[in-house]
Amino acid sequence: MSWNHRILARKEKEEVYFEIYEVYYDKNGKPNGYTENPTSIGGETIKEITWQLNKMLECRRKPILWAGDNFPNEYKKQIK
Image (cartoon, rainbow, N blue to C red):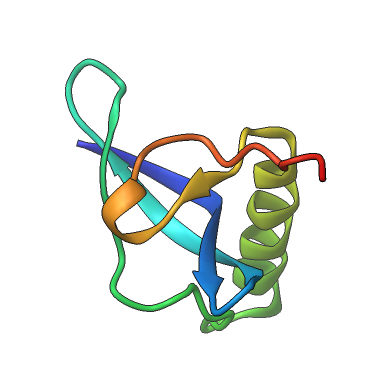
């Protein structure tokens, strides 16, 4: 099983809220789960924190996924 950081969207009332989670993938590379809570930043060294921050920046280049019942569908901003 592999994982990476991804931005997940969730709807709260009429607003969409975005957070970074660790998303897990099956053997075919399809998202099949994510951590219960958003990712926090921490480590034993500044180098570890820098690695985490860089990986979080990388996730901005990937499609945003819905959290909750709509996971792992992609979030697509709806034009009003």
